Length: 164
Image (cartoon, rainbow, N blue to C red; front, side, top):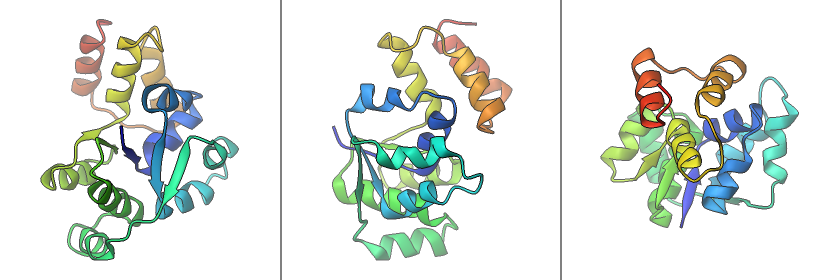
């Protein structure tokens, strides 16, 4: 399975101590150079985030189609990490792109890239028995990592997890 990730799923899971879920679910996660740079230069200098780059199951690759990257940045106003992640997912014909930002998800979907976000990862983890309960992890993501989720989506995810 080929999985490409944007920055936020990696950094958020690292902050709350659940980055290992990605290895358990996907074995290897590929990130573009811009995402690696964002992780290395995290503004709050959180060692948990920068440590993601030392994980042996994180693979850094260059997005070669710079035309797609530039178009996503200029026309769709995506940041460089999102743009490179989408371009790399297209180039590799990825099975999934891990991305949470609404605009990036919309553009990836328009281009036919299968997407999964943090909440989807948590549901898979619960269904596979990797975590017992989704709710405290979502709560930690919101309080510790600044993850934003609407009340409706929060309720929907808890319902899907059988926790509401």
